[in-house]
Every structure is written in C-alpha cells, then in structure tokens.
Image (cartoon, rainbow, N blue to C red; front, top):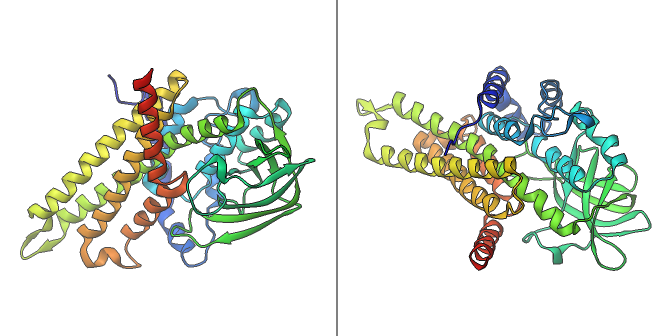
Length: 369
C-alpha cells in the first residue's frame, strides 16, 4: 500500500513549506503569549490567496476543489510551522455547512471563506467534560439562540458559528449564527494563546436552522471525525518539527567533549519519538485514504489517527524539551511553544479519553458486523 501523497499534493506541500519558511510564525506565536494577537490575519489572507482556505470547498462555491488530500498536506505544514491561523476552526465550519447547510447558506458563506474574507467555527462544547449529546443545553427557538458555549476555537474573531443546540422539543439541531447582535464574546486564557479560545454567550441571538436528511448529532460526529483526521496531520507536522529540532540540538550540543546525541539515553528518547511519529503518520494516512474513498464509517480511522497523533505530538514536544535540557524550559527557547500547541491540540476536538472510547466502540461495531 502506498503511504505517500500524490506528486501533485507533494508539490502543494513543498510550496507550503517554502512559503511558511519565509514567515516568522514562531515570533507571532511567542508574541501572543505576551498579549499579542492570537492569530495572524494577514498571514491567513495570504494563505487564502494561495488557495488553502478553499482547498476542500467545491469550485461552485468559490473554492479550489482540490480535495481532502491537499487539505491534509497543508495541515501538516501548518503544524510543522505552528502557523497561528484559524485554519482548523474555519474548515470545521465549512465542513458542517457543506454537509447540512442549505444552498442559500452555502452560497452566502463558502465563497467568503475561500476568499479569506470570513472565518467560522463550530460551537459544540459547553464547559468541561466530554463531548456528549446529553451535555448540549443551548436552546434554539423562534429563530433565536439562548445559552453559552465554551471553549470555542477562534470564537472571539470568527464571523459566524455553526452551533449545536436543542429545539423546543429537546431535539438536537445545528444552526448557523452570525456572531454579532445578541452574542457576547469573552476571550479565555489558554495554554496556547496562538490558538485562542472564547466563551460565547447567546442572548436571543438570530440564527438559522441547518437542515438535512441526516440526524443532526450524527452529522456533528461525522464532521468531527473528518476534522480529527485533518488535525492528526497537523499534529504529525508538529511532532516532526520537534524531532528535527531535538536531533539537530543533540548533534551540535557538546558536553564533556562529545555531542550529547552520542549518549544512549538521548538516542533511546529520540528513537521512541520516531516510532510514535511513524505510527501516527501511518494512521493519519489511513484516515486520509478513508476521506478520499468516501468511506461511510470513518469513526474507526478517525479515532485511531486522533489517539496516535495526540500521543506522538505530546511525546515529541516533551522529549524535545528534555533533550534541550535546562534551556528547553526557558521562555526564550522554542521547544515550549511546540509543547503548548501539542497540549492545546490534544483537547481541541475532545480529549484522548473521548477518542479512545470512540475507537473501542468502532472496533466493537466492526467485530459485531
């Protein structure tokens, strides 16, 4: 089985790597920790000009329609550079619109997303705790939203949100809300300020129902599964950057007259990181193959990719700090920035426990079939 992207997608990835190498993303990330902007709006517009914002949006809605494979490759390069942009959150919203939005709603928002003129997000969580249908309490009635969602990725700056709520009969629905009148946004403290989180308080905010023949909760989980695979590639890119950084440092940092990389303790640490990274990359590629083939049940591939990529990035970022020794913990050093991103991504779409539960459930369904 070929576990590589197509030549065309590899060219897109190479273009992305060269483009991001010319941007000082880590400078922006570091500035966000001192109160700077959480994301780089100018960089996002440049990415939109390259076609990244509309990579998976069909051409009929102003996108480039180059598909999920390119989206995965782009996500990996963004993870490698820690680019502070609303890529994941906006793609979540776009995926939800494509799946359950009306033609009018798609025409209203998808071209703006593709052009970099608007960003979106998915408002699902309502505080601490696992993602669950029972946890949804926000109400939608008579075209109005009432309740609170938090944390919401890039919620303080997004133009609209796809909100998971309940109708007057208590049924789960998806609605589209412009984040203006009737919405109070509060920026939340986060371990990674370059992936900002917000609290959204809806007080009679105008919203429009998203309608499809699919059960809204099943549609929400399906969107999350697809986002999990894209995020897995972002984590793989971050883990690869950590491994490269640690290896380079181990080769050039001398102690007692020899490079620290010659010590078995360092070799074993980095070998463990390599194994975890390759496992995560393989599982992410299997997820990408599922996206490309249009497989109906992506939950197994998504959960597998999600669990292994979380473990790989957290391990790689931790061992990168350890390899750098005392300097690795300092504010001026870069390893802590990757450690922050690894832990932020580990919780962004539900905790590792949530995805382990989904993995077990998917395996049970497969063996019962």
